[in-house]
View 1 (tube, rainbow, N blue to C red):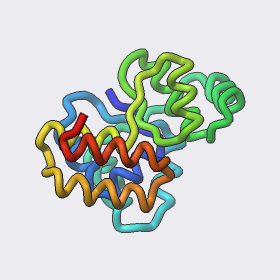
View 2 (view 1 turned 180 degrees about the vertical axis):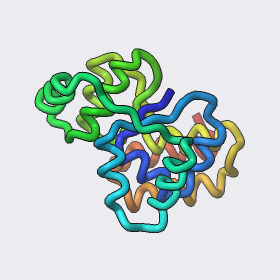
View 3 (view 1 turned 90 degrees about the vertical axis):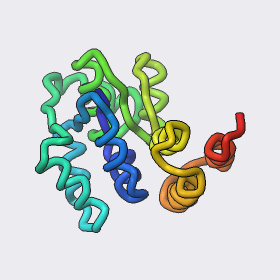
View 4 (view 1 turned 30 degrees about the vertical axis):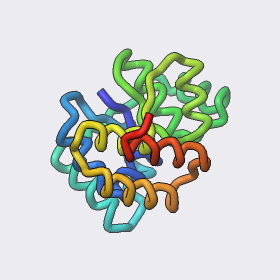
Length: 166
């Protein structure tokens, strides 16, 4: 199971990688209600991919049961409501991975011992698995660099991995 935060969901849609992830992932892809609300307020072509997956039930929207946990996570880790709901949902479901590109949410995942992935991780794994070619991976990485908030070292490490280095 993958629980998405808004940032990673939107980033993957914008680099045309969301479809590939969903079609090649065997588990459930879920988002909390707040992430759905944050995501569908965007009025862009790439968001239509997310809406289509919601309509086709390839992405499920799940209500977080413990609103107190959401508040605590938001306050303790200085994260927005969408990230807090995603983390709470991952904790409630007791399995899976959190997909987030938010720095504070990543720190929270580490402290809470939740597995996490980022859009860059998904891209690198897609190339490693041969789902996309290296050249296409580099183009998508450049696009991620221009639309995301990644440090130079993260982009350089990802480029090395995509090109096949270690």
